Amino acid sequence: MENQPSDQAKSGDEEKQVTTKLGGLRTMPFVISNETFEKVASFGLLPNMILYLTEEYHMSNATGTNVLFLWSAISNFMPILGAFVSDSFLGRFRVIAIGTVISLTGIIMLWLTAIFSQARPPHCAGVLIEPCASPKASQLALLFSAFALMSIGAGGIRPCSLAFGADQFYNPSNPKNDRILQSFFNWYYASVGLAIMVSITVIVYIQDREGWVIGFGVPAGLMLISTIMFLVGSPLYIKMKPNKSLFTSFAQVMGAAWKNRDLALPTMESDGAKWYFHKGSKLIAPTEKLRFLNKACMIRNPEDIDMDGRAVNPWNLCTVKQVEELKALIKVLPIWSTGIMIAVTLSQNSFPVLQATFMDRHLVPGGFQIPAGSFGVFAMISLTIWVAAYDRIIVPLLSKFTKRSRGFSLKERMGMGLVVSCVATAVAAKVEHMRRTAAIRQGLADTPHLMVHMSAMWLVPQYCLIGLAEGLNAIGQIEFYYSQFPKSMASIGVALFSLGMAVGNLIGSLIVSTINTETKKHGKVSWVSNNLNKGRYDYYYWVLTILSVINVFYYLLCCSAFGSLENENKPEWDEGEGTQDELELDDHGKGKGSPVLLATH
Image 1 (cartoon, rainbow, N blue to C red):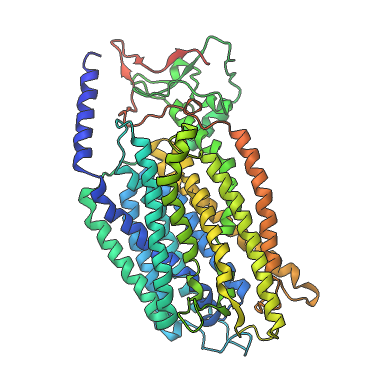
Image 2: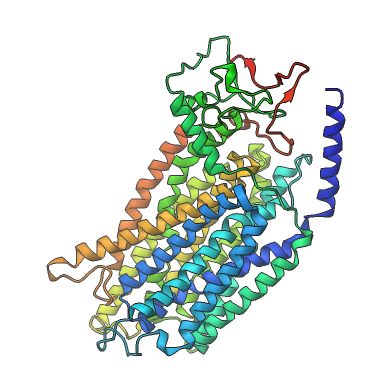
């Protein structure tokens, strides 16, 4: 026991030396460029992709939109798998590296569909003008394979990049560490947003002016540069070791709790219970919430632990830390579910592009014409301005009055984002009603491929509101998950946001399919018809608005049930403590430090 403090001091000195040599600002160009170019490849391709599918593959508006919803869903679902793999098996660096290479392969395959005409159906003027040949199964297979590979690659990059960047600044001994991490989150998101803003304008413009071959070739080249840069920076990175399989850990907790379901838990007033934990762990007793899971770490018999202080069967007895990790995940799920509906709103990329395509997109009469797919830049401008203003202006001002270093609380920021998203869809509905009315008044009801004499700048307010909603809710969500999980689960926290986006994409696809199917019955024109001027896209946006308002009230209910976010309501996680899987043994071969008899409070 006398040597333990010196060992810890030595370990701490070694950790400081390693941290000094590795990580820090010098790693940011490599980390941020990797995430940025992946965003360029996906977000730069996404705005105009509805035009590529409808013009080159002859899909209907509803079908093309559903394909993109599903592509986005898979792209956002894969990070949850990538997070588990990185945190449990390979580590963040390896998963990002593998994902980058796979994503590059997918973009090259998409590029090939544009290069070779055999990869697409024969060209035609448009489904509203003449009959067009449907794509062959082999052509769709190549296209969808490209989408799938890009989604798999995103699954490796997206959940790990932000957490990997945070690893480079991780210094728990610094009292300002929380503030540094908050600034990193905001500026990281802002820098990526700024890069996406440039990609949406430049790449979309190239696609409009130079065609799909060059338009898809540029992202492929940028992704190649991204791959090279990330790998070149490898010697500079702090590379956190993966934890043991969290999949297995969660399953063990649930299995042990079920097997011990007949075991009586001690009451709050009782003398105590024997809890199983590892040497050096700060988690020596479970929290009172979700108490039924506490049975997984409650020692039933001394025979459950062997002579080395390990659980004889980890499926019968788990550590307090394992139990609390699963609790942390379960506890955030209700608030996580409130992000699904705003994900539907944030994913409205296809229909606004179709609207803008047949509106007057000139900044000034006879001047520069904004590409239809580039209007998303206004959302990114709004997001970037908000993040910069919030971090440097609003937070310092609010902290003087609220005495809180974060400004608005995470709950307040997420809630405000949900409210703004409601306003955004309501504005979109009103603008679409104006556009449709103008088109009919101009005699364009049967000629939707002709331009409506109405400025596309009317679409800017809804984009700006969507950007503001994302800046409030998305960043708030990511910080919320990061604050509730231990360091070993950081990537899973980030991936939860992506998972919410994935479910939102699926819900969005379901909404479009349902509206398309139900509204075209009995020979009526579908609300999401190929003919924008006969469809009722304004009604579609009002449906989203109603669902978003309902979601706000659901969010308030979830926040009330969650309780406070203050530190005293969270377990004190083991961070950088070097806890061991084995227990420290005394002179008689019995474990010291665990299990122990503790009063439950």
